[in-house]
Image 1 (cartoon, rainbow, N blue to C red):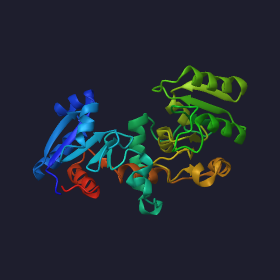
Image 2: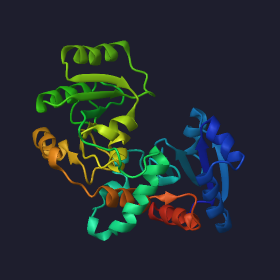
Image 3: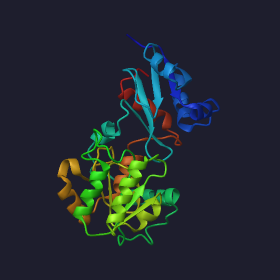
Image 4: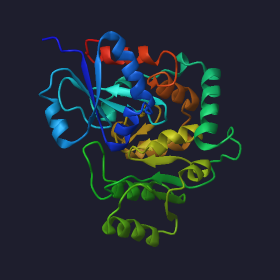
Length: 305
């Protein structure tokens, strides 16, 4: 049965206010793309009641950063760096369309990619070129949350990952706690014990940019820091699933010993990959053809727009 041309976008309080004021760029572009095609676009509060009711309403639903709840719903997620976005049929990044694509560096112009990466390195990190960037420092482990638990997308828990890296290298190790995570007392005690027992291990909160400037390589479950590390030409090992896996050493595919061995000499196509993954495979909200990019993405997900 054909659906009425109604799109309801479910938003938390701050983005809801921004959308209503026309201050949320990608949402404004979505409205501008759909209204000329006869759609009514509504901004809705992302409450439990509204979310559950969305499945019973005819038309389409879009959830910001949340899982789509039914077959007529999609999710909108930032493609790591504003103003790049993705519209997907799942909330799991490792199941995004780009995650299933094949990356061929020969299909991306190296000069164009280098210029793009250089401009964005300066914009995102205030890092002009690669001057002062070295690989003389520690192995950098940017940690996320739930340190003592192995989740479905992980090959092992973060604590087990730390111990695996300790056994695989004689280099200094920097454990980076995420400044936005609310770690439990047990988690903090566990990582502090590791740092106290091993003089090679340093524990700090935040400091990602400084760490990426000097570290040898990055090891993580699936932290965005690994992708940011490509701007600093730092190879990475992933212990978890994610959409930016293509040019990184993946423990699930290679095994931990091989991945941690090969990263020492890995030479990914850093700039070409960043250009392909971010610029070529997402919606850039501030370009003239963003409306068409949005329509194309919705049509690929099966919506009649």
